[in-house]
Amino acid sequence: MKRRTRWHNMVATLVGGLAVASLPGRAVAEPDGLRPVHFDKRHRVDVTQPPWRVMGRLQTELGTRCTGFLIAPNVVMTAAHCLWLAESGHFTRPHSVHFLRAYHRGHYAAEARAIHIIIAPGFDPTRAIATAQADRATIVLERPMVTSADIPPILTPRAGDDAAIVGYEQDFPEIARGDQSCHVTAVSGRLIRHNCTTTHGASGAPIMIRREGKWGIGGITTLSDGRGGGAGVGLW
Image 1 (cartoon, one colour):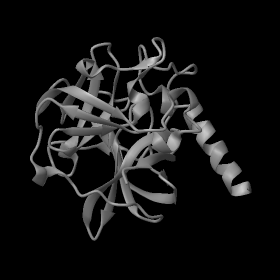
Image 2 (cartoon, helix red, strand yellow):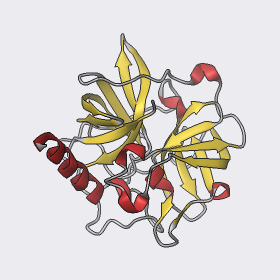
Image 3 (spheres, helix red, strand yellow):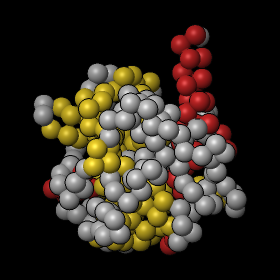
Image 4 (cartoon, helix red, strand yellow):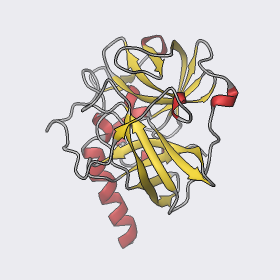
């Protein structure tokens, strides 16, 4: 019972901070502004190179934005809370969502609009803590953005795995930056705990796992405390 309580308290702290508030404008508001990043290990990442070329910035015609990544030539994954509009009480419509692959300072390798969005069964943005293990969304794009050969394999993370998280965070929204020297610290159900440095805007970024010197996709970044720790959701 103590272990379950500690985990619930950690999720509550994280959700109360960055996770459900990673979008500006019409998304859930962050009452106390950006969390400071402590022990910052993030560096700029070249998103034109593998495995990061599957990454991009998700943005809507309402001005909200987040991070996403391709798991198929025309399929993007992101955190479901990135698409929730608290003021209207519904998720963003597909026609409003654009994926800008390899975005960098206003330029990008390719752009496509969403034609279909699937929110994982069981995710309730009004009960984000209780449904955190389902905080993922699948977005089908109007056209392919990469080839199948560009997509890293999907891996099931294990505690101790080398990890990396790169995203378009709100302190540097125009460039991709991330921590490539961190680890998975625990896996509980679909929830993945890590010690990567992240902050606002990283929600929806891939949690990359390195096995035998090669990177694969281990999950979706969903929660962060801005202090070198957080959690994500597995794709399995």
